[in-house]
Image 1 (cartoon, rainbow, N blue to C red):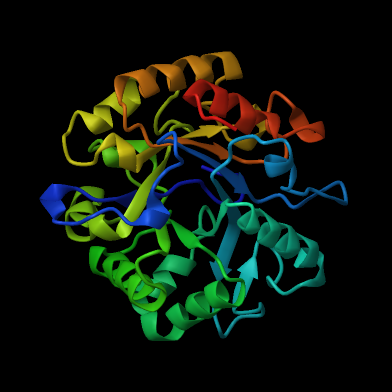
Image 2: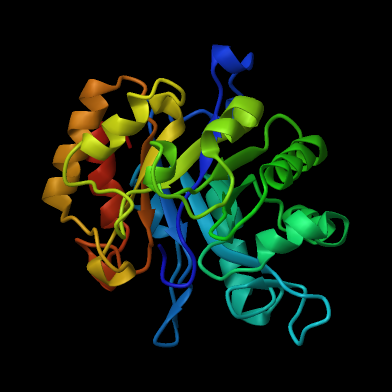
Length: 311
C-alpha cells in the first residue's frame, strides 16, 4: 500500500469478453507501459516537478497524480481533495501546468482516486448520484486522460461496475480507466476491495485498460516472476492488462522493495516470457531510486531500459 494511498490499477479486454482494445489504453510503441505515481508534489517545502520525466527522455508513458478523495459533503472539508488540499489550491497551480506540458509531449495524465484513505468509494457505492458528479466535474476541469481507481475499502461489484460504466459514457472510448488492486486479488488471494476482480473483469473487461497491480506490502513480490506468473496462469486476464507495480524506494511502503538490479532482472524476464507484458508502475516518483530526490527520473529510465523501450 502507499504512504497515504495505495497504488494500482486496471484495464483489459479479451475476445472472451467480446471487446476490442481502445487506442488510448494501448501501451507504448514497444508494447509496454512505464507508469509513475506522482503523489508528493512538495518535499521540505520544495516543489517536485515531473517534467524531467520527458526532458530526460525516460520513456515514461503514464503519470498518475495522486491521491484524489471525495469528502463527506456534511463534513469540514472541501468536497474534492488532492491529498490535503482542494485541487484548485494555489500550491497546485504549477503542478497542473507541468502536467499539461507532459500531455503535450505525449504522456497520459491520470488521477488516482482513493487509496489507503477510506471513504471515496463507499460514497460512490452508496450515494452515487451525489458523489459521482464531483469526480466527473474534477476530471473535466483538469482535462485528464483517465482515472486509476484504487479501491482499498469494501465496495460492491455493482457499485464499481456503475462507476466504470458512467465514466465510459461521459468520457468516451478514448478515456483510460485503470484499477489498482493488490496483486494477490488477481490470482485468487487476498483482496482489499470487497468485490471479486474476476467477476469485474468478465463484466467490464472491455472498459478496463489495465491493472496497476501492487506487488509489495505482502500482497506480491517482484524479486522473481512467480507472483506475476500466478496471475497469468489463471487464464483470465492477459499479460497486456497486468502492469507490475513496484516500490521505487524502501521508504514508500511497509515491505517488498527490491533494488534496481533485481527489479530489472525480473522485468526483463517478464518481458521475455510474455511478449505482450503490460509494463511496470512505480510508487512513487519524488524519491525514486537510484537517483533519489536529486534525480527521481532515473527510475523510469532504468525500467525503460529493462523493457527495451526506445526513448
